[in-house]
Every structure is written in C-alpha cells, then in structure tokens.
Amino acid sequence: LLPDSAWPWTLSSIWHAVGEWAEVRWRSNSEVLRVVDQEVRRHHDFRVNTLSPWLGVASDLPGVLAGRQTLELFALGMHTGLLREPILALMELLPDVEFNIVAPCGGDKLCGRIPGILCQDRDPLFAELILTHMYKKNLNSYQNMHADFIENFPLMRNKFIAFYREKMLAADILMCSEPLAFCSFFDGAGVPVVAYIGNGPGFYLASPVDRAIMVDSVQRLASQPQNTFIAMNMILAISSEREVDTRFVTLMPMARHLGSAMYSYNPDSMRGMGKLLVTKRVIASWDIRCMTQLLLLRAQVWISKVLKEMGLELASYSDGNSPVAEVYQIGELSPELRDVEAWSTFRACLVLPWDPSGLNTYDVYALGLPMFIPDPLRFLPSFVYRSQAGSALMNKPGPPPKPGEGSWPGFWRRLPHGFDQSQPNFGKMETGGGWDSFRIWTMLTDFGQLPHVRHISALSDLIFQLLDIGGLKATSQSMITHHREMHADSRNSWACTLVRALAPIERRPSSE
Image 1: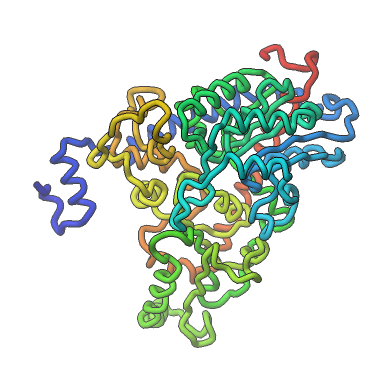
Image 2: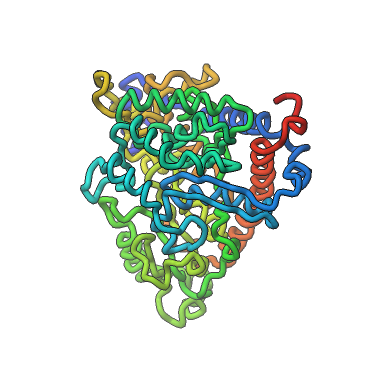
C-alpha cells in the first residue's frame, strides 16, 4: 500500500498513499496554482471590463454631481462592519457632501470596539420584522450565532416595503449587504442599487421557494446598468455566479473604519516576544491561545541556550528573563485591549481562519500588524474548510431535499467541489475534487492571496520570528505599502460605482 519513498512514514505520505490506492490523482503545487491564477485573472478582468469604462466620467465627480450638497442613502444590512465599507468609500470620495443615511438595522457589537456611522439603535419597525420573521438555527453556543433563517420571506419583504417605501423612494442610492436576500427588497423601486455582500448568496434562506424569489430579484437588479453588485472576495463572487447565475465585481474591504489608526503598527515592547494576538474564534472546540502560550513557556528551557549559540545575549531581549510572549485572543480581550488602537501595539497576529471570509483579517492587514497564517497549500485548507465534505474520499452525496423541505447547504460545504482544469469555470459543483480542490479554493481566499503575510507550518515557527523585531517591522512596511496601493485602486473602483449609479444619461459611456 505505501510507496517506497514513504519511509519514515508520515501522515502526509499515508494520506497520499490512500489517495493513490483509491485512484485519486494528486496535483502538484504548480498545477494547483495554475488553476488559481486562471481564476484570479478572470475576476480581475471582469472588474476592469465592468468599471473601467466609467473612469473618464469618474474623473469629473463634481460635474457628474452637478453641485449636489447632500446625498441620501438608504442602507440595509445585518453586519455593521460590512455595510460601513461602501458608505465610507463614498464619503472618502465626497468629503464636502453631507450624507443623510437611513439604516433600519442599527449597529451591532462592532460599535463597542470601533464607534462610528451606523451605530444607532435598531429602528422599531425593523426590530418588529426581525422578531416576527427571523429565527436562530440553533441556540447551542458552538453554532454560528448570526446565522439566522427567515420564515415567510415574501411576507417579510412585503411588510418591509410597506414600512419603508417612502424612505427608499427618497434615496439617491439604495445599499444592501448581508444578507443578499435583503437586496430583493429594493426590486422595483427604480433607485440605483449598490450591493456589497460578505456571506453566501443563500444566507438566511431555508426554503427553495424563498431562494427562487431572491435569485429572480437579484438577477433583475444586477442586469440594470445603474446597479453594481460587489462581493468582498472571489469565493463569494464564484458562489454567487454559480448559485444565482450572476457575476459580481470583487472588491476587497480596505478597513476604512479604522480611520487614523490605519498603518499605526507600533509594538509597545522591543524586548522579548512582545504581545501576540490570535484571531481564532472563541467558540472553537480547542484553545489555541492556551496551546500557544504553553508552547512558549515550555520553550524557555532551550531558547536561552540557542540564543547564546547564535551569539545573542538573553538580557538584550528581556532584562535577563526568558523572552516569552503574552498571548491574547480576540473575543477574550480585556477592555483596554479591545480598541483597534491597542491592536497596533501587538508584536504580531496569528490568523487561523474559520471560514473563507473574515473582516478582522482586513483590519489587521490595514494596521500593518505582521500576520502569521498556516501554509495555504498544506495546512490552511483544514482551517478555512473545517467541515471537509468536499473530499473525494469522504464525500457521500445524499438525496436532494424534497420541495419546501431541507436547507441549502452552507456555501463552505459546497465550494470544494468541481474544479476541473479543462473547463473555464472548473466544472460543475456536484463533482468532487478531493484535497486538491480544497487547496485551490483556499488559495482563492484573501488569506491565500494577500502578499507580505508569513506562512508557518507549526506553532513552533513563531518563536524566533517573534524575536526578530527588525524583520517584523520590515514586513509591516511592506504590508502598508501594498495596502496603500490597493486603497488607491479601490478608490477608483468605488468612484466608478458611484458615477455608474448617479451619472445622467448624457454622461454615460456609449458601451452602457
């Protein structure tokens, strides 16, 4: 069973041997990356082709706005951080324009950490809709607590329109984010729509009938030239393309809500290992903060010896004490460390994703806080796709749910299927792709795409890298330089989105 080269046997070699025995073809890294690069180019080209015709118009924003002094926005979304991004992007473009924002959802817990726009109380009429039509899937504390589902979606939609019709019609732009289903509330209003999604297209919808209503609405809205549908990453754009049959522009969040804290990396200690921030979700079944802290404590015995062999004095790091990091975890931070300004004082951040999207990652990158991420071609897939239903060796498709029954599988369960290098769109979703499919999907996440992050194969890799403060500062500067470049490109894309929504007919490009 085992190949000759497998001795001494490792879990990796045994896994590959099982794959060979099961006649599964394992792709090389170069083959995986070739598929990834192909898909990256496809999304880049779609964004350019969709928005670049508007660059000329966007260069004359004052002319397009014709002396407009105020902008009326109606903004709808259950995730404050996600909904803030497009609004702050427009505010950045129009610093002299007053924004009047109607946001029925109100603010979420992010407002306790980063105050700002959208942090008002939930509108009573919308709160009534939530209490009547939206329910928790499972109140168990180990479940995703914001993953609600909507009961009687058509009735909720009709009530919402009855409650907010006048305010929607009075808006210059209608904005929607999480869930995509809320965008369908704008269908028929005749007001330009900007959608910015950060979760799967079927999120909150359990009924096939409700999903069909959402899909029909989104397809109609996306086909209208003044509207722009945007996904925060390629994973969501691909998911929407396959499940809603609609192409979304891809625009990464720039963490604009950080304000003056952006690019503020300044570790508060040049000695020892400083403070290490961990992003692993608290409700996981294992305690990564504790594991990391214990590892660094146990390492004290040999760190001093190795440093001396390198010609370094331990006293130069920590006044004679062993250089052990203080490890803290998001979700368990003391009040003085919850503010985003406090995050910039950490030495580095260990990022262990729990699904393909995560807004904290963009905050960390925009701070310039050096990031450690598991090797994306070897270990990261097990974090990003923690429920490995896509493995060709493990996947056992069940019968489809009966009409009106069952739920739409979470998009992280469905995504690892269907990468076929011979087809432009990687084949059909139903085709199992095995471990290499997981690797491809993982490399398409921003965790796999962002440059200037440090990849690790084990927690022990952190030890000497945390001691290298000079190297970490150089990494931070590279992150900041890259983020500035992305920010400038993002600004242009949002400018094109704005004029696409508001430009009069005579200013619209001929291609539109």
